[in-house]
Figure 1 (tube, one colour):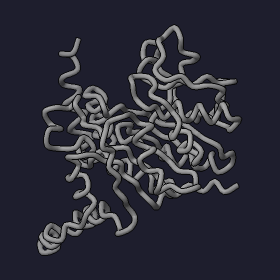
Figure 2 (cartoon, rainbow, N blue to C red):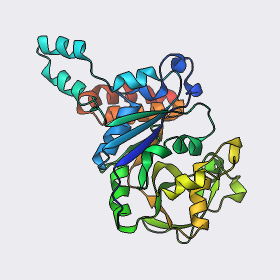
Figure 3 (spheres, rainbow, N blue to C red):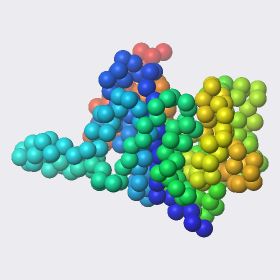
Figure 4 (tube, helix red, strand yellow):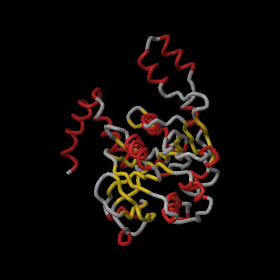
Length: 294
């Protein structure tokens, strides 16, 4: 069916204002969850799904993000001379081969749809993934890998979906589905950030997408939508209007919204407890303070 997905777009142009003053000098995507930056979790997930070409849509002030994926010969030599081979191996796993990664500038913050559209000339006529690093998903099998395996069978467009409370609907794109049972959900409509009373379901679109190149063509024509931004969900909905298929994918795993301080802290605790070398000390600390939270 020609549904092999090997390219992913990472929209990372946002200013991260919710994390000021930290993001005054450090890109949000470089902020560390335990001991790895958010962007590394996204890259690892993409690689597990078979992604071999990585496109970053950036903006001014993201130099540290680009440097993160570059070689660090002085640091490597320091670790080698001290016999710290385990750390050297960890460091090398963050390197990206020449030609494997590309950077595109989004000069104006016009929305997620516009950020994806900025990468259009590098996509061509092949399906592609979109990964939002803010959404960190803890799963036995990485979320995008789950989606790719399903996508190779059905094609079209696919978005990750999860249930949210009605009062949270206005923060997400919400799916209107024919049947909300099962893992694959056939979508008949999408609404971006509706009021609770207008939401067609409680199934929200989460930051993982596999899209047909026709979505990029739709973005040429999409007008500003919710929030005065060019919305990616509007371009996907346009494919629906043209008779092309869209499926929601109910993934297995726990999603953390690391674009919020609360979500970032929750992810830090969860990922810390999942690390054998950290679990005992962290668990003991948490048990000691829990009574004081009442």
